[in-house]
Length: 440
Image (cartoon, rainbow, N blue to C red; front, side, top):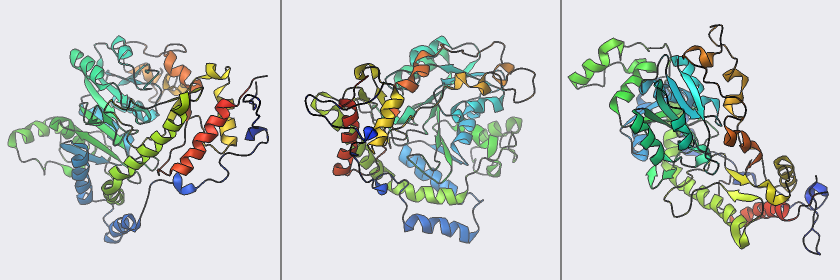
């Protein structure tokens, strides 16, 4: 099977076959991220010169400002997003023998922290349109051991929070939002990260909100916050609790005793919080420009009756939901509209045009050897089943939508500026391949 060039009687040779490239020269600044200025540099250098990388006063200011932006009362800066999600799990009470339901088609940092707490990740399938965890599949996997649902707003697209929260409340389990893809995303007008019981948020260098390397736990539940502090923020002890009743509660069982309960240090480096504070000042205006640019790209591909083989991954325009900073954006690929052309061939052809196309989706965790045979603690059995009374592993074919996505999704250009003439070139590259293919 090959890609060729036919369109009526007029032939247009694709670049992969020696034709002219559609995007002849790439403007690197169109994709460069994060945007940094002298203000960012001054903030970071001030921390270095003051010798305050490992203190917490700047972290506290960042937490307040992030909470004001997100709309959450309690916020705790962590060294990375993985640690913030571990704290979120501990915060909602995940412990030995518990099960945590989440999607398989995610980065490992959205699931495997459960092992540290003696708990077990259980994977559910995704909705083929949103690419987020499928509420209908969640309920099938709930048992007496289920303590929490952890969901990812995948590639910036909000999950079906109304349905997920209804299931969780019906079964008395907690909901953790992984907002690492969706900083600034709205779900029906409400900010992602405020919809569940607690959120963990990555702020590493590749995300749409960057603090250098860091994470944030956000919640409106004081006791979840206190448990998170107790887990890995030993330096905060009991000094900021003035309510004597609350002080007595969190001091019980060693909480807030001055030592981290699991011997983990989760504090954010203050060069990162200083950087994050400056980035936050401009974040909303920057992601609004990203939203205009990304929607422009898809509007061009959908215009004129649409582009065969391609569908946007974004909420409906009248839904009140948005894609935030469009982290790691993807599109739906429909090979049957292109004569069964494999996604790899399509990607190769678009890249030859200079159109920036990629794979963009993770390998399903439920099929990974570490989740099936890995024995992290020397238990003589896979860690995935060491802490529970049943074999929770899902074999090939058990999560069909997750397993099929690698052939039905592709990475699209992640524009950081809304430059119409440049974006039109990339859309033209994609259209050219989709409209001028043939099989032989």
